[in-house]
Length: 80
Length: 412
Image 1 (cartoon, each protein chain N blue to C red):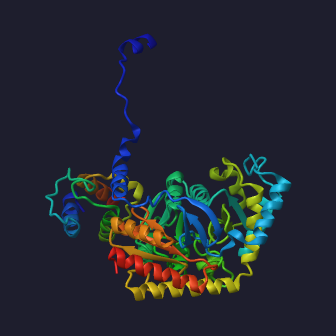
Image 2 (image 1 turned 90 degrees about the vertical axis):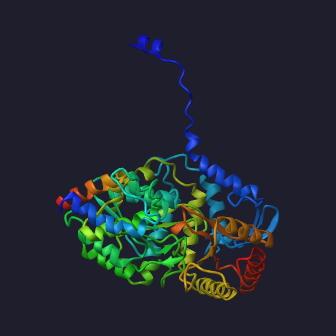
Image 3 (image 1 turned 90 degrees about the horizontal axis):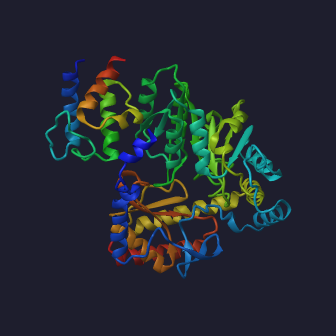
């Protein structure tokens, strides 16, 4: 799956969590722009994991701050 | 080089490393500015019994001390400690692996093997260190730890220290656990970490299903039974015993600072190579061993807990009565049924929670105020933990206090 396809799919997944309907770019951060707390992160990550049949460990999550990094990480996980 | 550095270096502005805690300082100050007593600065001036103390100058019923079996003033437990202190001195001044293993350290480990019916027992200075030590040592870089998202801080800290890959799953969700185990590389080392009773809400884990699934995927299993030892399961060995899977659990972690009534932590196991951990587990090696008096008191307490059937039954009665009474009064509780000796009362927010906590204290009742980040889902909780030494009348008195305070604050 191409990064663009992954981006499109995760955009659908994020909708229910993006309460203020923030416009998302690659630079959009989860903690500040989207105001995700730890519980939201867990639910959102679980959705992505189920959708792509991957595991994003907490160690990997700690390296992901913005949208672009998430797409890159999921793309990499998909290939491995 | 050195000279050049000195010449170009000007005095830098000092950077205050504590500035990052300013938001916490502000939250605390605004809470105290509202006039409530500081919930995190309570002093017990006198302790009268396992269930009563003079707190901030008031005679207070204790309902938040995890002293489940009321062993803190047991005459045999006290006498064992006094004798050991007289014979062996006040402290060990050394690590367990050097000069810190006395007769009673060995004896308390024997008592734990008897209590759990297991081959090995290792005693740490606290329960926190037991989790920190065992988890960080058995699961290292390249291994996976799969844990419940609501796990205790000591479990998370153990994960961080060992540098394993940490994979959390939704609280008590059997399917979420299995999905994650299925996706991990079959050849990788895996440790599933669960708790018998989760201390924030007082709910019990579905260990039967979770342990079986973990084993099916080749994972080892660690269960923290800190909040169940002494009164859950036929022999008080915990939730894993009650659900019939204790034989499949690789490591049980526990503490002396709850039902046992002293201080210390431990791990029991049937793993044939378990004893090697004494040499490689840093939180075991690089700290001083507990005082001999604590070890002697603990050993006596553990052996008495093996015969605590009547006390256990009374503790469960107390838990059921309080749960039913608080529900009838209209409080929102963490569990629909009483599952343990912890009953969590859910508060609308931190401010109301602190007001309610203080109102109860003025009534003469101490409970734990728990708030984020320790609590799940950002909740503020008043956590009640019952004791086998609370009398049936005391539980009724407690319900009266909750009713008056709850009405005064406007929660019920």
